[in-house]
Image 1: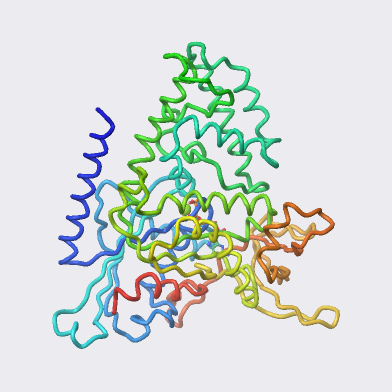
Image 2: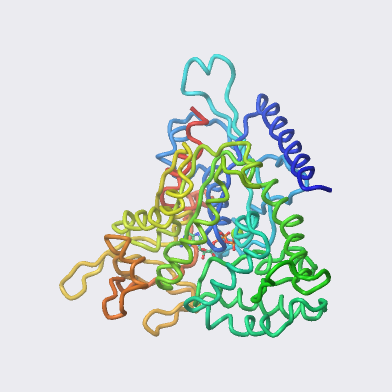
Length: 491
Ligand SMILES: Nc1nc2c(ncn2[C@@H]2O[C@H](COP(=O)(O)OP(=O)(O)OP(=O)(O)O)[C@@H](O)[C@H]2O)c(=O)[nH]1
Ligand SMILES: [Mg+2]
C-alpha cells in the first residue's frame, strides 16, 4: 500500500475516534490523563495513590472540589477500551498498604476509569444537572516512551545517532562488544539469521548495562529491547543499529537491508499503534521525572535524562510536519512537570528540586514552545515514605528525614534490613541547578555538586482509624497536582 494511503486511513480512523469521543462526551464528559515518565519515574505509584486518595477521602486540602464538599460520589467504572487490560489497582494498593512493598516494573499496558459526581460551584451550571466527570488513565512500561522519537527517524539516522552516542562517556566502555561485533560483519553480504540474532542480543546487553542501577542512563531506544512485552523473540525485535553505513543503498537481501526492514516493521507494528491509541488522544499530561536518581548517579546520568526528555517531549509538539503531528488532533492544554519522590528530601529543599526539574525540561520547552499549553512545575511525592525531623549534630541543628530503608540499601557501609527506621541527612541540593549540569566540564577537584546521599525507603506504615479502617496513603502535594490537572473541569 502506498504510504500516503496508510496515512490517510490512519488519519480517518483517528478523526472518527475523536468524533465518537466528543459525541459520547455530551453524555458523560471524559478527560484522558496522560501519565508520562521514563522507566521507574513513578507512574504506577502515582496512579495508585491518586486513585486511593480519591476513593478513600484522602487529605486533599488544595483540591478545591473535594475540600468544599462539592464532590458527592467517586467510584471506579468499567474502562472505555475493551481491548486493553484493566489497571490492577487493588493489587498495587494491597502491595503498598498491606505488604509495604512497591509495585514491580510495569510489563504491559493497562487502563483505569474513575468517575466523580459533583455539584457545580456556579449557580448557573447547577440549574441544569449535577456534573459528572470520568478520568481515564493509562499505565505502561516507561521504556516504551523512548520509542516515540524513532517515528521521525529512518534506519540510517537511527544507526548514526545510536552509534555516535555509544562512543561517548561511560557508554564507550559498555558498547565495545556490540560495536566490534557489528564492525566485524559485512553488511552488504546476504543476511544470515544467526548474525541478526547475535547482533540483536549483543545490542540488548549494551542497553541493559546502560540502564543498570549503577549507570541509570535514560536515552536507550528502542524501548521494547528492554521491555519486550509479548513480542519477545519476534523478528520485529531482532535487529540492531549498524556501525558501518553503506554509501548508497545496500543490496537487496543484505544484512543492512534486513535490519532496515525490521526496524521499519518495528515502527509500523509496534510504535505507531502505541502512539496512536494512547498518546494522540490525551487532554492533559503529567510528566513525572525522577531527578534524584539521576543526580545521585552524577552529571552524565543527569544530562542523559535531559536529552531523553527533550526527545520525548518533542514528540508531543503539535503543528510540525511530522508523522506525529498528523495524529495530534487534540491539543494537550495543560502539562504538569512533576519532580517525584520529594519525600526523599526535607521540605526546605523542595524549591530547589523544583528548580532542577524546571531546568531539566527547559531545553525541550524552548525548542517546542509551550504551544499555549498551561505549564507548571512542582515537586511531589505520590506516596510519602518518610517523616521530617531535626537532629543536633556538633552544635548545629540539621533537618533530617526518617524512614525505613529497603532491605539491602547501604549508607556509609551500613546495610539495612528493611525493618529498622533511620534518620538521614541527605545533604543540600545546590541553590543554582546549573551547578549540576556544568559539572561534566569542570575538573573533579572543582566539583560544585554537593555530597548527597539518597536511599530507597519502604512504603510507609499506614495508620488505622479507631474502627480498624486504613487511612489513605500519605503524599506530598498530590492535591495540588489534582487541582492543576482537573480542578477546572469540576468548576
Ligand atoms: N519514596 C518514594 N518512592 C517512590 C515514589 N514513587 C515511586 N517511588 C519509587 O520509585 C519506584 C518506581 O515507581 P513506579 O511507580 O513503579 O515507576 P514506573 O514509572 O511505573 O516504572 P515502570 O513501570 O518501570 O515504567 C518505586 O518502586 C519506588 O521505589 C514516591 O512517591 N515516594
Ligand atoms: Mg509502572
